[in-house]
Amino acid sequence: MDSFSLVHTYNKKPEGETDFSFPDYYREIKCCTQCGHFISRTPLDLSALYQFDYVDRTYGGMQGIQRKFSEIMSLKPKQSDNFGRVEKIVEYAKTHFVSVSNLSILDVGGGLGVFLALIKKRTDWNCTSIEPDARLTEHINEDLGIESLTSDYRTVRWDRKFDIICLNKVLEHIEKPLSFLEKAKDDLKPNGFIYLELPDGEKACLDPKGFEREEFFIEHHHAFSMKSMKLLSQNAVLETAIAERLREPSSKYTLRSFLKHS
Image (cartoon, rainbow, N blue to C red; front, side, top):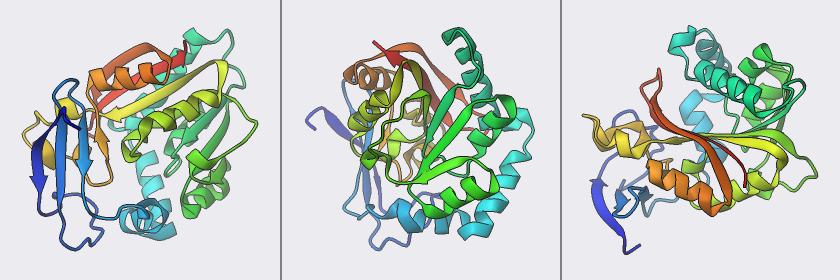
């Protein structure tokens, strides 16, 4: 922690952040002076955020989940983060695999299921989602017809391997992202790849809204720099095939990379 310096303090939640009704709201953002990585520190208890409060307060229960899914699916391609994400992954898969028929893809933290719903429209891939909230799993299973498991991915022990594993805006929610990425590596087929997306704190902090942006909201333990993203992959003994930054249609500052076994 000696290499981290305090760069921002919150005494109330930023505008736009989900209201979890925390009393005595307080957080600090610290930045690594060596690699530009950001960490969020707070005395507030965030342990149950994704099992109950997050879905209820973000979407408003099952009806809200279905309504938000339909809203996002109706976006035009140029307005949709997921459309661009799907196109990028499919195009990379064509260069990575000899054949792109019947690939297996795991989406960790599948959320509303929009990403895999679009993958199903675009490919014949075998799709699996894993989500800690049972209502999101029910929606993905029953409404979308996509296999979805209710679990904390870190605790899943199975004999399955996947051609593609997607960690789309997941690792920033994890206090120890390295062990999470290492698990994904263990679940990856020898010739497979991991698609990784992370909030770009390096660019977000320079935006006029700066630390009031969603890249730094309370549910994010981390915001990354290009250097810290590459260091994370290196520490997991994964080779970075592509690493780039983008500004998504939603206005998010994003880092993404394609990773494979070294």
